[in-house]
Length: 118
Image (tube, rainbow, N blue to C red; front, side, top):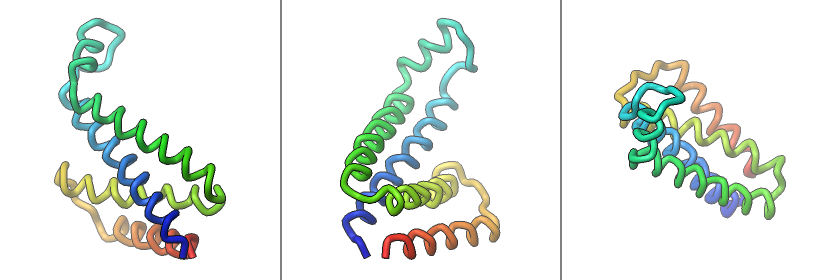
């Protein structure tokens, strides 16, 4: 198993999921979307929206490193780990209910990532 690739993919996937969480938190505090000054002002002063950008930017930089140093056929499927982190974040931060079929899907993703990283 390529532990270094798996470790980097876990970090990158975590950053992607946290970016989505911060985006949702930020959007909940912003004005409704529109091409007006009120919306853009609410975006520019929203720290969750800024943190979302930092998470996505960091994930992108890490992704550039990953695909430069590892085969993309192995690295790209590992990005699906962000779905696992996203579902856990939905439960922890947004108190969403996750049914058994979603847990089975997460198990399949984890199993697939394990097989790919071997």
